[in-house]
Image (cartoon, rainbow, N blue to C red; front, side, top):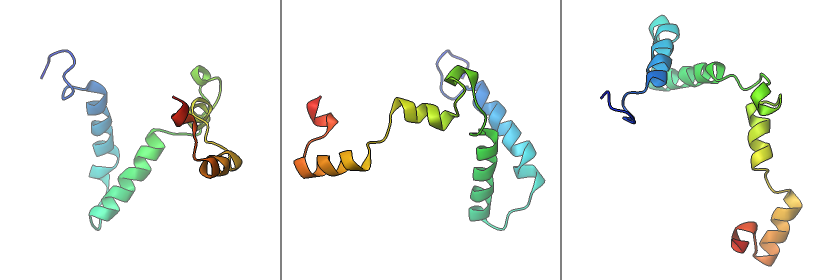
Length: 92
């Protein structure tokens, strides 16, 4: 388990799981698995807060930064691609 590159020895993930268990799982009672999954989803959203601006991303939110890398095509571009049967992927 201690070899370099071993995916099962991830200190960051272990730290996250410890935090998740201490702050969420051990402090609540859940009705069923669906309730557990919903609550854990909310905790993950809070843990990876998507609202703050990050200086490394040019003071943009992570979503804004990701969108700037891979913008979605406009509705008009999507319609014209369907009509002509071409896309940017076809030109590669």
